[in-house]
Image (cartoon, rainbow, N blue to C red):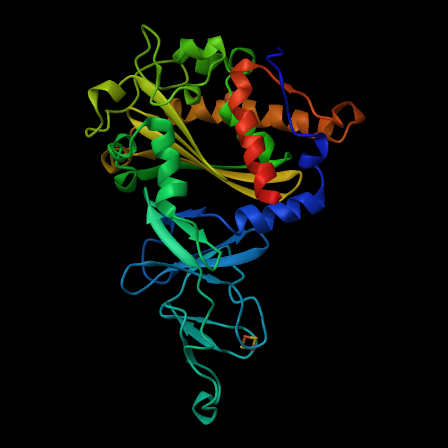
Length: 366
Ligand code: FES
Ligand code: FE
């Protein structure tokens, strides 16, 4: 019996019709992580984000709750907010005929509105999408009936770590963004996920990471075993580019979590990396079959960030890992349209769990 499993065929990574199917059956159907909560810290601060084929306006209500709307005026369909980010005082006002919506999406003003009793202020309010705030991030779901957040999002953490308490102990919602880097990657989003799921490549392209986590040189990712965190090597003081000491440990984690690295994939577009003194969170924005933007946040305790501590040695480790990984993904993308990959490639035993991801995507797009 062979120990090899076939991958997806090359066209899964290049076909724009297949990408359109993914937009409707994956990104517009599942919980999608859009912004860090502190990006919309105050009522009226907003971000606009592309989710599937829609532009989504994410803001905070006067009550402090995250809100998300389709970024489309209900009058004649103009895009409501053009800016990627900004802040309004009380209303979003359309540039076309000045319909204005409050932070809960209700239509509150329009020229001659009082003379037009048929224009119901609630019925013609902005179309809301479902919102959750968890781990300090805002997640939206465009589906009419969203899937269970507990099963899909929290469940991915439980599946990986064994329980929910293990991630909650890092108090991600209380950490703050110490650094954010945006990567524009010329590769299909599934190549990025597959890369993140395996560590067969670690010994070849990640010298700094395998220096800190020597067990990664063996090719089996921490994600391969439930609850397992890769241990820092002897003599390694912190999760930094040269293994030197990092910042002070997040006080609430367990002794068993100290000196260990945990990685979690939350389908379809979030990666979470946990180390004793910080967390690294990736949000992927698939823009085309061959283009994916990735925003990566390095989260530290507010005390560490306020102290002005030098975060560079911590940030540089995973920034290098990211660049090494994304370069590898970009190197694969052209091969996906080669006749050499018409029937795909193979997964070796340390990559077999990627086969489950392939089964999942096939089932979703039908
Ligand atoms: Fe927005 Fe007319 S399209 S007010
Ligand atoms: Fe990697």
